[in-house]
Image 1 (cartoon, rainbow, N blue to C red):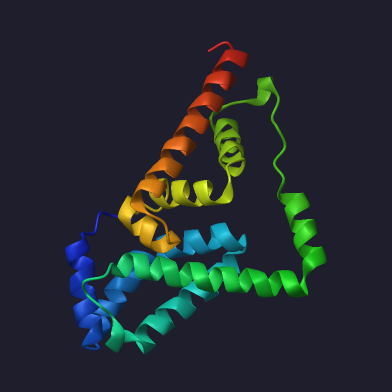
Image 2 (cartoon, rainbow, N blue to C red; image 1 turned 90 degrees about the vertical axis):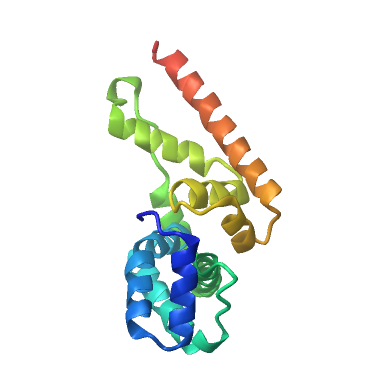
Length: 189
């Protein structure tokens, strides 16, 4: 995602409130990728992620009269998507408990041997280290590092204080640094 300013998001909110379809299309073009990645992170399902993002944008258009340009439109999109994705997951778990257990078992990552560790394997290893984190810490970290949200936007999205978000991210980075240091020691780097 390129660096779009909060002023641009405010301008889009004002324009969308006035039913400006080109502003809505620009917002869609800018935010579809990050929202899709976030939904896929929650659902582990690319198709469901695409559907959820479409539903969020449809909902934004439906409630466009209520958009507040002074509140972060970016954070609102992520919050709406998070709620939609979590509801989707609850429904899916209720109806497919057995399938979910099979998916989780298949999704477990195999530890590569020392001989096989290269750049891509290190990426897999880092993802494992991220997956070890408590859910809220992992979510704050990924929203910050992968989606580029500010601490304030993450705080609003997750219903936390900005200081708590900062603490989650600091702890996540410390966790990754300690794992990387141990990895380097094991591999003689």
